[in-house]
Image 1: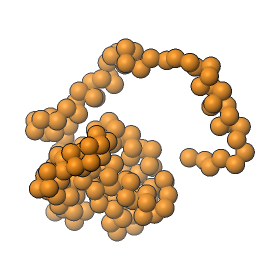
Image 2: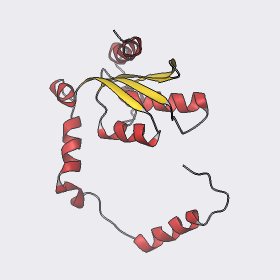
Image 3: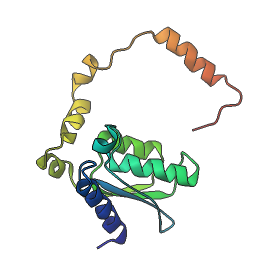
Length: 152
């Protein structure tokens, strides 16, 4: 078995043994070394965003003192939900290896597939509603013209 996936599995087991969340563990690796480990802590933190991947990304960023995880690889027990997939992209994670699929996750009672369907269908137009664009553009322009900003 892949040693990094084995560590992700151990993290997933921690989540369920401690009743912190679902069986989702993640490990972030850079240059062949584990940088951070995380697991689902939704229940223990009352934070619906504290999925295993997010937990590991937060820890890796803190450890490396950067928001840019370029060159890192993530191993996770379940195919990332849309939020986690986007977080991996925002963090510049190079590649993601996962164990169980979205349908496997659905089979144990999680609703990830519903989120994928939400983004595929036209349901978004009734949920994402644009308002106060001109005022928000002023804020955006202030950022655009800021001389000392850090680039993402």
